[in-house]
Length: 511
Image (cartoon, rainbow, N blue to C red; front, side):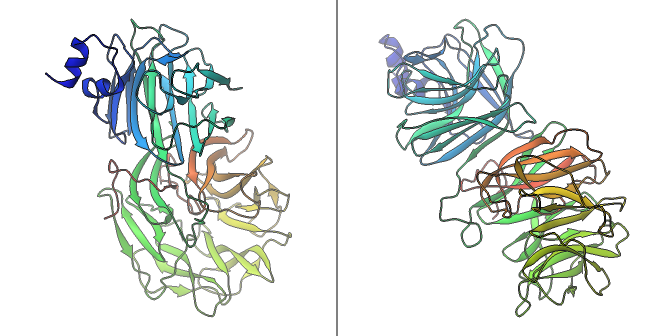
């Protein structure tokens, strides 16, 4: 007789060990397993759609509350600090207002386990719930936000932070401290119907389990893993297409819709989107390439930036997109190439001259550089609009880093964003309708810095203005995430880089 059957025959309450034997299956997607926690009438289930990287989870159970819980749990064993994120929604109207979906961290799979969960209820109540010790009464901190469909739960030691948003908005956070669940915990997604006779279902997208960098890792000398993600702008759902334990950065999307070009360890790579394989892009003797590289509008040429001995840092170069020996553009550095004019006649770049970083323009065939910005402080990330009427850039001149634009001759420098964040690297969609940029939190990052391994947003604005920026991606990244133009030719997708120490065999991994 099996262990699970002996438990049931004996009429005992289903313990964690019995649950694992009776209900646990190999975990869907990135998870280790799944199980019903507590005695439920209707067994739950989880199905992973690999093409969409989406989870459908069904669960029953009376509640997750008081001194015991009943729900369906899709879990992974983890230690240390981590960050959990998803956007999700129930399928159908449902029966109970307090049906639940969310993230859970538990000491064990026992029904009375200590836990912390970040939960969305059927009536929109969003809360951080926790049971400090086994069998204790559940406590709750209600969020100011109701109807959240993006939930993030982060652990730093014994501190847990829930960050929630209605999709498109920035996060609002709640925090609890001194909740000791032990180092070795179960983390995962859950669904509870709040009615033992009912099964509810929720769908989860953008499911991310991130192990962040420790304090010794700044991304320049030490690094953590990188993932290339493809974002569908309309749905705001993204798919991981490639992972590496090394630092890859700044994907450009080629005009033929076949490849991404990114940098890694001084080399440039061309990633084939059909075969999901990278190959080194030949740049000859120029082999200290950084994440400032940009394709010409016709897709034939690539401007790159690479360190050169005796040139005071990075220098700009131009090379055919098919590869070859690059042609040098700058006599002095540092110089970081960011944009081509639509007619291919000019390049715009960020240059440090006389201890000031400003925007410069230079003929693509070679010639004298022209300074275009003179305001004190850092100006960076210049990029032409497809119609050639403006150059967008980011500037710290107003106190925080904000998005600006100017005419191609440097006149009419005008601030575009006016918020309480640090905004970098504006990229204009190929159809000329949208601006996307990366946003850092001012409490985490100095206005003149754009470091690795931070909580960041990708946000989008219509180019004609008239509305507030909308978040299209919530992620852990920063430097290298979207330094370069990475719109797809259809203006409907974006490529970007996220970071984590944890890699998943579910997604392609660098060999």
